[in-house]
Image 1 (tube, rainbow, N blue to C red):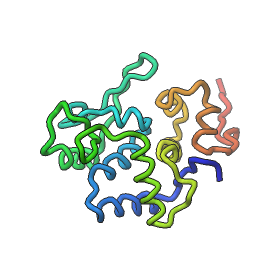
Image 2 (image 1 turned 30 degrees about the horizontal axis):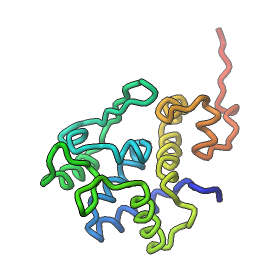
Image 3 (image 1 turned 60 degrees about the vertical axis):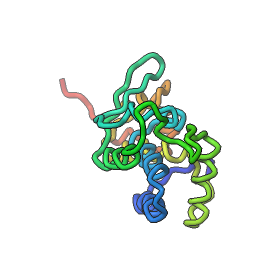
Length: 178
């Protein structure tokens, strides 16, 4: 498997969520849940402040000069409410025990440790989370152009490769009868 494999089984996603719940780790549960449900890049998630998400229905980000509004599920809003109940609006959403914004290395280490403890595939990485979102989004909605837009990719083919689609889409092509 290539680095950053896609988590295709929803049961594995629930297993990871349950792991964080059982360990009382709301911060990492929220980070994981946001990643697999929004497709945002890790750096976009780590840059969030409490005010960016608290009591909001969507996250607003700017990619390549384009403002994008990413809706939040009720599960995510509930986790945000729990995590931010004692936090100031200007605080980083994802912070360390010292109150500083956590970095990619910390997230990577924590995620790899969790996967190891759960005896999950070694090829699951932080890149897997965004790819997993894309895979499940496509399987649910079949909309590659929306994923291309969200991922800011140059072509639908790039998006297909990114989310592990090797299928021939010609069977979905319909002939027009004008």
